Image (cartoon, rainbow, N blue to C red; front, side, top):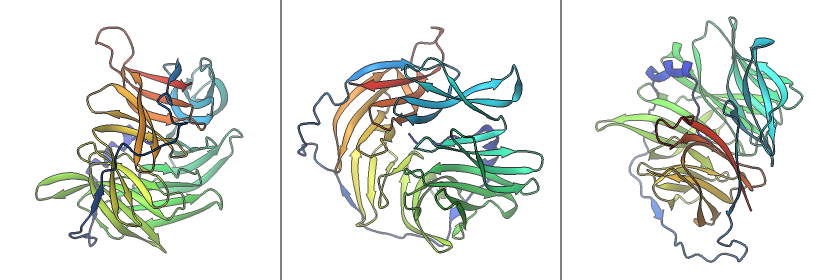
Length: 375
């Protein structure tokens, strides 16, 4: 699951606000489709599609980054205090996920780590007295590539970053405090090794950008933000397409959560204000209801499966995603409110991190990580 993680030192961004100006969408009609749950599906999608086989608890101090292989996850396992407190141990957990295996050590000052969906690269930000550097670390050889750098005199803040689902592009959102909170988006192409930067010229300074998400072809973006009107503040998602040096706004909708995902280069999924999970198709402007009362969700990399949680329940469900329907939903785990969900590359396991719902005073930790495998 692509839940957005903000480091504590980014809290200073709360006063920086950004808005769409001159991009009023105006009144428009919108077709909303509510598909039938009775759609036909093949026999191999039986009711036991997500029957749980084994649940593996992970070490409590293991900071998850994601999957590196169908039976292997990567994470950070604290500071190496015995030898060098300036480094973090980047480690791998292989099935049965008990003893971390050392991969390499990385600078403790590298924050905002984002593991690519294919598990081959980590994107992070390193701060020093000289300035800030955005880097890619290749796994497992440890080779570093500097994507961009900024001097310490520049008041720039990394607000968000994310990978395309095919692991080709990494995009990031930068806020410039010296220009009244002006924002730009950087897009790095790992295939060509080139970086392009797009100033959000059509955005003003009255509302605040929060997140960015890029499509697999590198030509479309999803931007989430706080917006204000006479009724007060609300959250919004905006789809924009890249045209030469500009980002042109194509669609906007009010949201209840920052979480969103691309299904392909033309369709994306987001959560509405009432927990409705919508799918929008930019080719025909159709808005489809997929699920209701959803709190969080995550699609598998092939977009054939979905895992999700619902409001006021500490239960995780899984289902098949077919056409415009979610089929064969099953409850797969009870007792945790997920903050991160990641499908394994072979779709046979779920990596889950979240808050336990155990009664206060039981002595159990507040958070826990699990790997759930299916039959």
